[in-house]
Length: 80
Image 1 (cartoon, rainbow, N blue to C red):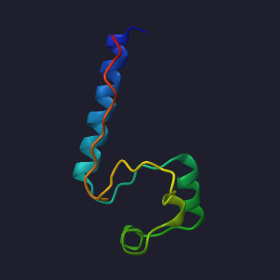
Image 2 (image 1 turned 90 degrees about the horizontal axis):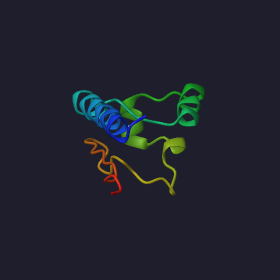
Image 3 (image 1 turned 135 degrees about the vertical axis):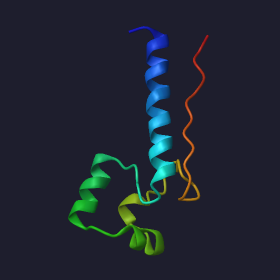
Image 4 (image 1 turned 135 degrees about the horizontal axis):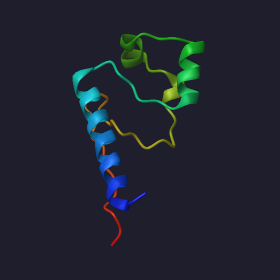
């Protein structure tokens, strides 16, 4: 696959994620393991915001949404 095609796909996915995050304040992007933990111990979005959800609060995780409301996605510039 060409580099330009990969870049376009990545940009499309990032734009989609931005739109979903900006139009839906109670949408969370999580890993498969985090989703399984939520299925085992479901919480409402109000509970998650007010008291948190430990499986989603990994100290070593770099937050994509540091303020928990508005997300900004970035990708590294392609190497030349």
